Every structure is written in structure tokens, then in C-alpha cells.
Image (cartoon, rainbow, N blue to C red; front, side, top):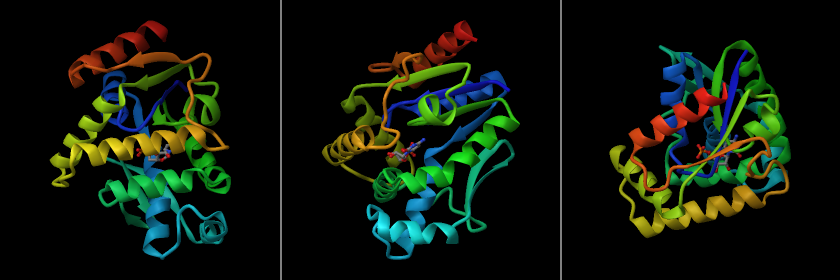
Length: 220
Ligand code: C5P
């Protein structure tokens, strides 16, 4: 099986660009952030502080988080319920970032990610795909852009979903998540030594897609 690992900070356009790359190659696109978001969602629903390991860990045996593909599109199910659309809020972004810093949560979600890559050719996006989840991936990309560019893209993406936020608030959220994701003790966000750096600052979405396709095709 061929795996393309795409890691990078929040709002670098990973999901849009990775999805387009997967479609181009005829591979399955896996958004691993959805797993952390679903776990964060469960915690908030049950009044559990997502940053407290002692509170989160006893909940894990009660959770079944599963990625399934419906018409080729990823959906994430939490205890049998499709929560894919409910996990996209800024509140859930922070909860996901909080639970993702807890080693037992990362261990809890690891096998599922590896099993998905064992079953199909995948483009998998996340924070630690090239470093921890699929260190054997044939192509590793570290996709990034300036914090301002990423915040503006996130703001527009949220607006498209009817969620209105101001730029300063989204930029603050991007910076906070960057800090959390790159300073946690386990699987911190960092570029794998053998990953190719792709910086999409100033690009349109179409330009970023074309850039990534060219880089991956040259590397395959
Ligand atoms: O990619 P997305 O913004 O949906 O991810 C939400 C959060 O989940 C990230 O801020 C990050 O903390 C965490 N995450 C992670 N490892 C992954 C994917 C996401 O730690 N592979």
C-alpha cells in the first residue's frame, strides 16, 4: 500500500489540499484530526475537562470512534452516531488540541489510523503522521503557511459554514493551537527529517493543490 503523510499546523489548508491530492491519485483521504475532535466532543458533552488526563482516561473505554467512508467521503462516528458536521467549531478545535496532548488518547487512536493505511492507498493528514503513525510512508509532506494566512483561511472556511468570527480571534486561536501542538510532550508537531516542506503562503487554493500534486508526483 502507498501512504502519503501530510502534516502541518492548523489552518494550512491541509484538508482541502490533501483531499484534492487524494482525488487526483485515486487514493482514500483520511483526516485524522476528526478522531481527536470526536474524542473532544464526547468530553464536552459529558462535562469532562478535555485537558485533564485523570478525567479523560476513565472515559476512553466508553468511547467508540470510527472513521467510515460514505460515497468515498470520510465520516466520523462516535458511539454509532455521525458527528462529522458537529465537530468543526472553534470550541471543538481547542478541545481536540487539549485531548490530543494526552498520551493515552493518542495510543487509543493509533491502531485505527494504521489499519486504515494498511487497507488502502491513503493520503493521511494530521500532526504526527510522518513521524509516529506512518513513519514508513512513501512520501511525507510538511505543509505550512504564515499564521496570518492560515487564520484568514480558517475564518473564511468557518464563514462558509455560517460561523462568523473576527480575524483577531481566529489568529489568536491559530497561535494558541500552534503552541499547544508543538510544545506537547508526546508526538509534538514537527517536520520529519525526511519530509518535504511545502509553504503555501500567498497561494490561492488552486495554486497550492497544483504545487502539492507536482511535489508528490515527483517524489512517488
Ligand atoms: O486537523 P484538525 O484541526 O482537525 O485537528 C484538531 C486538533 O487535533 C489539532 O489541533 C491537533 O491538536 C490534534 N491532532 C493531533 N494529531 C493528529 C491530528 C490532529 O494531535 N494526527
